Length: 98
Image (cartoon, rainbow, N blue to C red):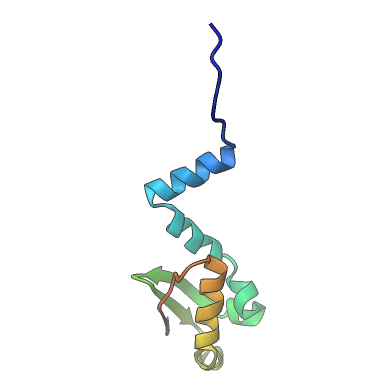
């Protein structure tokens, strides 16, 4: 008996569907975007970042340097737009810099 497949899918499609159905896709995108933090803000600002995480659609950034903190506050709206652009959806509604 020969089994014929009428609908084959690539492994990438299967994984993508699994991530969507399991609800893991947004968290994976979040990790992917945050791993690009140094490309988004530059090396100097990234080195001054103690921690960065998303909670309830808010991006929390803890910065060691007052100068860098002030600089990031000045470009907060641009950061928000760039992060959401890289995520491919509105991942973050607000940025909190501490």
